Image 1 (spheres, rainbow, N blue to C red):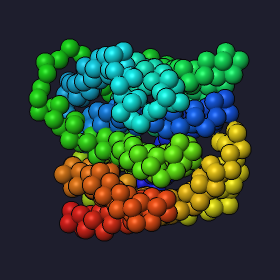
Image 2: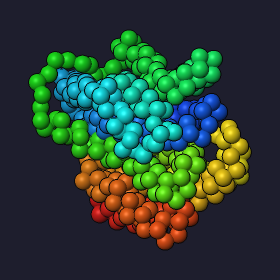
Image 3: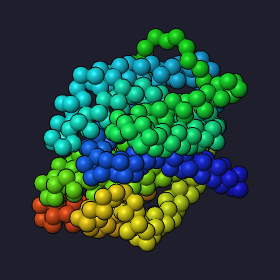
Amino acid sequence: MGNVFQTFVRYVARNIMGMIGLSCYILADTYFIAKGLGANGLTALNLAIPVYSFIYGIGMMIGMGGATRYSIEKEIASKEMRDIGFSHAVWMVAVISLIFMMMGIFMSQIMAHLLGADETTMADTTSYLRVILLFSPMFLMNQVILCFVRNDQNPGLSMTAMLMGSFANIILDYILIFPFNLGMFGAALATGCAPVISMIVLSIHFIKKKNGFALRKIKWQGKRIIDIIMLGMTSFIGEVSSGIVIIIFNLIILNLTGNIGVAAYGIVANLSLVATAIYNGLAQGVQPIISEAYGIGDKATVSLIYRYAVVTGVLLSIVIYIFISVFCDPIVALFNGENNEMLTQIAAVGLKQYFTAFFFVGFNIVTIIYLNSIDCPKQAFVISIMRGFVAIIIIAIVMAYLFGMTGVWFSFLVCEAITVVISFGLYKSTK
């Protein structure tokens, strides 16, 4: 048991640190854009964020799907089969990246309009979208390599890569927005360069020849592609749901309070992404351990790791909510460069009400990854689709109509609470 707990701490602690660093991509953009471009820049960023979430979600789907299968089969499959799995993931990224890049070149302005940009935010939203889409190969490939290196018993290097990428993003954000005066284009360029730095760090895993997988020429296997998609679908939905929630909330809030309300929600949403990243770090940290234990039939370790993860999620929820409650006003002031009173009021109330949902978020995310790790992707998919699409959209629209902004903030709590009941039922059914 001692060894299991030590392994749990080693994987989870490093992965949480890495995910916090990775989530600072957008948080750094939020801070520097708020300081350099004001409320309109903050609104433009929040309108464009869902596209980043979608790209990131595709990368997570391919990376987590391929790496989960790699962990399950690592002790029983041949080197050739492991290489084939990794190679499929890489070539899937290559094809999807080409599509995203074409969208960046020809459709950025159309997408900005569809996301709600008006004449005051159109230029900045379009600029951010174009750069993010053109850098999509870097985002996607970085996620795939991160997942495989982590599952190849090197969580420390994955953490270092994520932190170095995030640190580079923060430095480049400042340099490109202020001394170089590149505005929104500079913020997006800094974000795009971060995964490049991360992959340079990850290359150490291959240079030292510690990798248990390699790229090779393959013939496309439909079953392999479907397997990667199915095992990674919950990660995709988990990430994309953040973007879906932001789009729905943006449109609702635009009707209720206008651009200032969207800017305030931008603060809440981006801090929410950081908090969610902590739970994702916890879940992704336990995934390799659970998958490997499941692969060799060690059911006791599977159950033990899940319990560790749930308890850790509860403790994290308490810490996160206390932190938000105590430091709410300074946090809002940090992102309110123009000292807009209306923005301050909406964001401060929103933070305290929206973050009540995180008492349930941890359990749902951990259970999704647990089910996926024991090769139960259908059950995991049900939870993901419920919290990411079905429940939140319906609940947000209804509660906004009934209670205004208060309904918007608390709709997230109601959605996650309902999902907990479903998560617990599906967990019990698979035991």
